[in-house]
Amino acid sequence: MSLKRILQMLAAFFMGQGVTIVSQLLIPPFFLHRYALGLEVYGEWIALSAAVTYLNTLNYGIQTYATNQTTICYNRGDKEEAQHIQASAMLLLLSIIGIVSLAGLSIFAMPIGSWLHLHHVSTRDASLTLYLLLLQILLNMILSITANSFMVVGKAHRGSYWSQAQRLISIFALAACIWFRASFPILALAQLLSIVLFTVCVVVDIAWHAPMLLPRLRNASWGTAVRMLKPSGHFGLLSLSSFLVWQGPVLLMQRTLGPASVAVFSLARVVFAMGRQALAVISFSIGQEITHLVGQRNWPQLKRLYDLSERVVLVLIPLFSVGIMLLSPFLFTVWLHKRGLYDPSLCFAMALISAVMGIKEHKYQFQSSSNEHERLSKFTLVTYALMLVAAAFLLHPFGLMGFLLVWLAAEAAQLVYILHLNVALFAGAEQISMAPVIRLIGLLAVSFGIAAWPAFHSAQWPLNRVVAVAVLVTLATTIAAYFVFGLHEVRAVLQARFRRRFLPST
Image 1 (cartoon, rainbow, N blue to C red):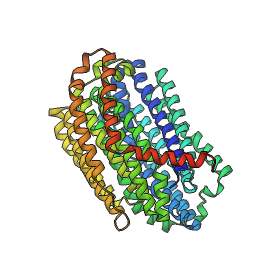
Image 2: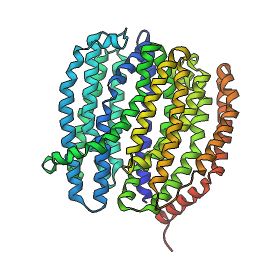
Image 3: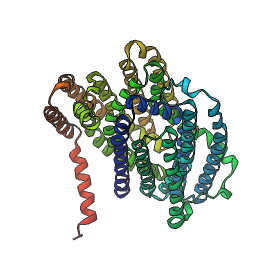
């Protein structure tokens, strides 16, 4: 287990979360204040973006499986097989890009405007925007698999820096276009051009510093590419599940409740996503290490990584769920200058969902990074599909709360199943305990019970009181979590590692 690699990935992902926060701080307020009827315009942009996001399933499945498998083969000493898998994955992606880009031209024959009930963009502009967004997703496949190939040689942080730089430039370009009230097609084109630019930059960087990572199509074979479809397809199902939970509800709400509800829901989701994404940095930063340890079949170190990372994540979950819930009136006021958008019931439900997802995303990383994801992909897809079916019946009579309740149930079911899969992953080698998760559930029950009264009464409080109560409750919860999960042991491990690295030996 390499602490250095984990810290490098942690830094890279913190940069990524910084980029995400920049996007969340800039884009929604610009839409709301630069366009007439900005709330509805923002809702329609979200709906259009969601309409093609499902195509990310193509990239996620192939890129994730191929990168993981290439890394595993490379770390077992089979470099020839690693290059063969990498090249075959590139051949498969290029074929998909060609087919989908041609098939996507059919968008121009579809009545996109009437299908999505759009009122602020013409059907022609809606179709052009969708096609440009489609090209953006397709070209991002090449950027992603190329940048992520750095993981093979233990330098995943380098590829992550390139990806985050692309995202940051794309955000600034999008914000500039919004500032000048550009049309939707121009917004989509700005993002597309940034991907083209950075794909070229990453290829040049690899050719200069790690030429063996450049996929060479002469090493590819259609047989391997076709065999890759099944395991990649299961990663694709996970990505499709992501579409169902993030974009599916948006499309459903757009048709059932209208763009204003879409915008309110999306803005509340962004507030909690900012916190949960900061938490997810820890889980994502150990992904490279999990893959390396699985490749080396080093189960004791993998179990140790599981235990130590779990403690850190579980301590921080109350901070990024209860704390953000109590700060929501302040965040809506400072960020959007629209305190009236704060809905206590909506934020309370989102905080519960965020807490469950925080636990799940840590456990999920061990299945994903070890390529042991097939059963998980099927279960996740089924639960999210059932969630949307239930939401279709509940949205109209109960509004947004109808969806949030079934979403919480779906996340809880997935958490229980992933915990079962984690036990199976270590079966025969190491044993893992469910006790830390059970302790967290008890701590969250107490924390949400204490936070419920201020959450539902703080809408009219002065902002300084909102912040003071949020800080006090969150601080008390975090201190309790520190001792409940024995984080002092993690601190001792880190201190010992730093002493050995930086202090002179005697």
